[in-house]
Length: 233
Image (cartoon, rainbow, N blue to C red; front, side):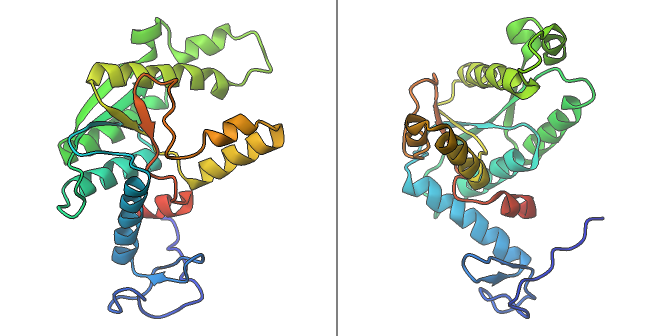
């Protein structure tokens, strides 16, 4: 079993509730939190991000891009919990959007994780596949690849974005929520900065609407570090 995360420099009890032993210290805020308060404050942080940037609106049908990994499953769980919270205000219909790229020995398990959580939460799962959409799997596409400098991820990324668009259209959603986190944002910013691509840096504004997608996309985890998403999961 993985080792329990060690408490930070502030030992003792949770600085929020004062009742339970501290479990995690947020170095950037100085809070020492118990497990329950950590989860509650993570959900609250996502709620504030969604509200601040006007990401979701009451009555919208929201497609949550779910790969079956920790980030996307946590996003689905948090948006579901917010949707049932009367304090949230923006009541939405949630649909999970998953893509089967066709990677033997890899994707099947992740899809089962996604399906299990959707069943638990009572959320519809819309699944599309590369084979269904494009007539070939990712494994087949990589077998045909003759450019050794072109990475597998760069090939998959193009098809995956298109597949999510197709799933969104199929599910008739108003907006797609993806689980890109703060680490992803920082990495993308640094890559664009080092490449001198100033225009792409401007695209990182969470309030921007990217017109290149047929359905509006939002990133509710924009202000949450990957480490905290992993701990939440």
